[in-house]
Image 1: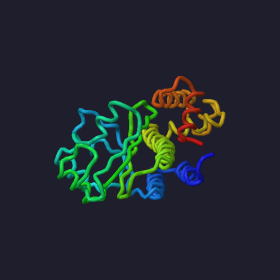
Image 2: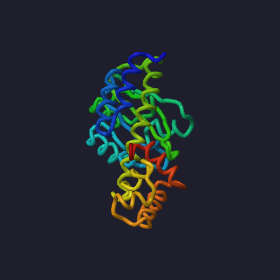
Image 3: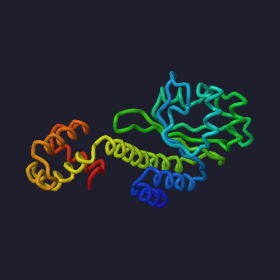
Image 4: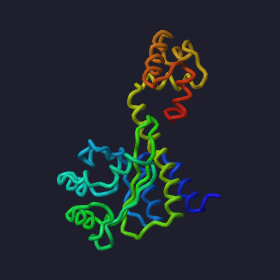
Length: 238
């Protein structure tokens, strides 16, 4: 049985309808574990130079990211080498005084992290629907996480990232489809034929079919049935 805290937080996160709402509830969930910040990023590679180019969402102050990138600290980040070797989570700390990091960290980088209260953290890896590797990172001022807390956070992170990924792609797809294409998809989902949709929208069935063909292509589907199923799954239509 899931721990009550994890179940309640998961229910809250799973019902989010916008990225802003998700981040608000996600940071509240992190707070239950005495963690101060949540960050979602692409998994870094050895070719990446700037943290700012990887971040999708973060509650860490943008001033920290700018200074971090200006001084080229990403090359010292312990996560880059970690994600190249394993899919396991990763924890780190610079110590309560900021002077005893458990990774190869330049003193001025540790000072920057200490100044912003990023004394410890944990990262969980996940995968986007497009197959790209992603990371969910938490930072805070507390002591080490227990194994039970790590297990709970891992499950919450996977669920929250799935919601984030869906909302991100829904927004992207909605912007790609025109208003007419969306109307045609909605009516198709209600079982209307091209002729019936044309009568409803005062369009020829040829024009309706053209809108349908465009929507099928844009959502990378092969037919109307798959298009409707994908649009419902992505919550473009209900």
